[in-house]
Image (cartoon, rainbow, N blue to C red; front, side, top):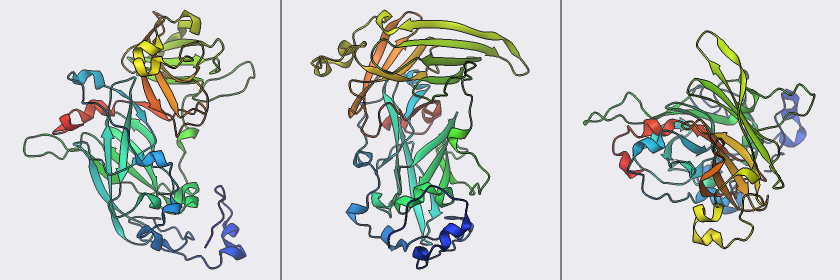
Length: 376
């Protein structure tokens, strides 16, 4: 039967509506699944035989990009630009880790997570695969909530589309790149573990963080215009005034931190106008892209600044010729020398306007230590 799609509502009376009377209530043991929540859910038989028209994912989410062979120098992947939205596909390598969890049909199912790191400005990605379930069983693409060093926190929602709106119906996993499990050669295997459900008292990733304060009373803003990160003992901050192609300006600030105190005030490091940047975007992208007449820095929409975790002066930007284009470009700009240092294509089929889905991550540093990682 059809289930109304609504945003999360704390009112318990919502589920007493007449049209929900026939819903099957599934009480799953607290060891997995809904973790004891008595949440109404339609019959889950579709997990074994879903129809193709039940696919709730972007079709491109079933086709991961192919990466060239890994670079000879492992140090160039000490950090990555990581796409937070998963591809749902059966792709495996030495980074693959698996575990088991209980879905709401009370069946124990396997889940596998695999990473594919690439040096910036190329975007790294990851795949999620459940061998006993088709992609139609996912309510939404699995998502990275946060990363820290060798750890990645993942959210997975199994079920009909409305399951993506209720955190009680989500499962959370921690991927660890450098686990304590070793093989016969002494190499460490990655691990994947199901977390106890956080219950009602937890924060969404968009509710916690360091944010810009506008003393002038202006509006807020999001990651389309600014980024902040801790790099080499400094809090680094970057802001772009607008992602519209006509004359954007970007600037970076920094502030030193210690374990017990803050030293000094914010210092403005660099500021540049798009017209100040030297370098040819078509030349960096290759001959095929050179035939695109609009492909120059001053004519593309640019936003989503992302601070490099390796080079103090480099900021990565997302660029698109048209805001609704399926293709975008990641630009590596040296803010101090005002040069375009690198560029790479990035599929933007899942990117609405300039809503970039990438984050910085040092997970790749620990993936290098997994046995047989040359297959990545």
